[in-house]
Length: 541
Image 1 (tube, rainbow, N blue to C red):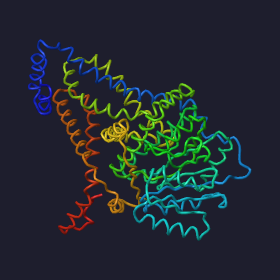
Image 2 (image 1 turned 60 degrees about the vertical axis):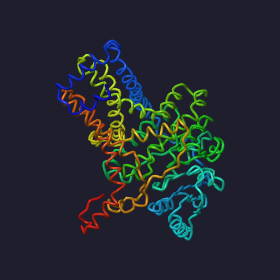
Image 3 (image 1 turned 120 degrees about the vertical axis):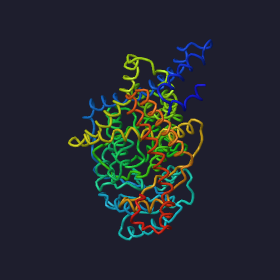
Image 4 (image 1 turned 90 degrees about the vertical axis):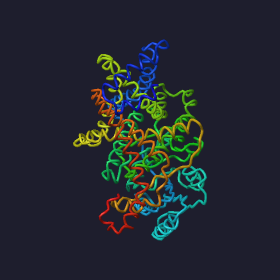
């Protein structure tokens, strides 16, 4: 009877709600369960899930504490300097990225490093006209004396990891720098990173990402906030306290002997970078993080591209945790390093938990309709503080570190940031479940456009558009569910719930409708054009 009564709560009047609740508790379970038992059967799992989620919130406070306590250990000079610079191989893995390949190679060509000590490998797995474009650009720079070579594979075996491993077989450098297709490394990158390898125990030097299109739209603004916190606080805290942290797959330089010692690039996970990072650190290799060295990159400008990127990261990190956590927990790493590693590798389990919280939220609201404010203060306020206050503090503190004179601007984006977290719930839940069940999936690239204006993005995106399937419809349905809860909350005078519920409505609707728009805008534009409407009047992008 409870499930069949749910639709009434969306649109019924206050008196009708009261009648249904009375019947539900007085008649349905009369002689079978005491009302208290039914109450707790809903509230106990709900608060257990919230309590587990709050652990990740408390962990953010702990990261902040460790960061501010140890940030003086960041950006220290290297232990020594090479008297003779070592040979370096630069690897540029590509897959169908014609839009950005020329600017990438141009940036690498300006690297301030002796050319006789450089080898540049363009590792191209493309299946479109990117290969022809690469060949032209490579030939042009070869004629200018740049030591650059094109390696084209006719299969994508192992995806990016397979390309990097195959390139390593012919790499002549003692060290290997990796840059994804959308990155623009600064000319002094090698000069500022290579000398940290005078310490023979250092296996990786990772630098911080910057963004060429941060202010393109609201989505890119939010992504920048998310990534800034990761690179400033998470990497900074873990590195400064001797905990494990990961090479991010790009904008870093690795010792070739470390890659071999750790077992090479392996492709049984979708995050080959994190996999190699943990295997190497378990072998005793040290990683160095340099937040003052910044490599600009391009953020996904479309919701579905962003979601598929996050799907790959969430699934890959869960696969790594499944693969390596047992060995990590058995290792002789310090206890705090193990705790940080566990919390780094498993945070995506929060997404399936959010599904549970979402499903239980309405019945719990109904059960607690007649319960007093004391219980709300004792249970809800601490949990919400751990979850939401930690989010605001975490991301604002990262901005204050980077932009001390303009960090308050980030407060304006906090609701959108939380909504984006909600928008990832279903796709990352799918990622976690697939990883735990061992379901394989291909490495889906993130579309890159070399941003030069919204119209150009819309035109370039046609070739990268992929069917989104059921995802946006589920998200829109979830948004409608929470919109119904808002209607009920207003009618029941539970207005304190409205800001919280609005994040779910906004997040799910944003994800669902934006994905559908991106997928079908080409058809919509064509239909408008067929009706004779001048395209300059159509703002489809």
